Length: 108
Length: 108
Image (cartoon, rainbow over the protein chains, first blue to last red):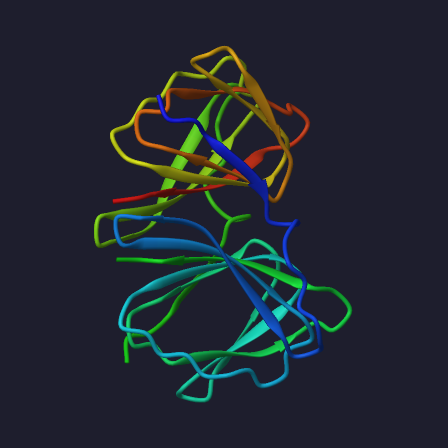
């Protein structure tokens, strides 16, 4: 039997400056990748557009995602988003009062 | 562009009775599967042993996982577990005072 591995999304590197994000890979298997993301006071973050689907869960904090058509979507803890491949998106805002913690699953 | 899809892990079917669990598939892509699990007052749940790796995050509640070697591991919200393929495990206990909400990622 392989041994299980444990951790907490509340532990991990903190973004150094307002607007910064840290990315920590937790697991990689079969072409999928699970990562922890911490964001600090993001304003109009970089656009992302990937060739694979992504599942994102906001674990702590508050955030707003923006999309290529100009729409925005607010997120509270427990809210998830399925971003299909080639769905252009960005973090428009995270609550400056609390670090935003995310779980991201990059699908094969 | 494919459209994003949104939801909350705090919404979904509630287990009907103490000891019960509900499983809701949120996403399936490239051999990976993301699901929401809600558990109510589990005591000595069924053993699982799968041919694939699984990543599990406790989102709400409190729980204890048990393993084939007799060890147990407590989980609080934000705690995650990487269960390698063929790692025999079960939910030993969930806090009866609050529904336990989990995110499970079954890896390809």
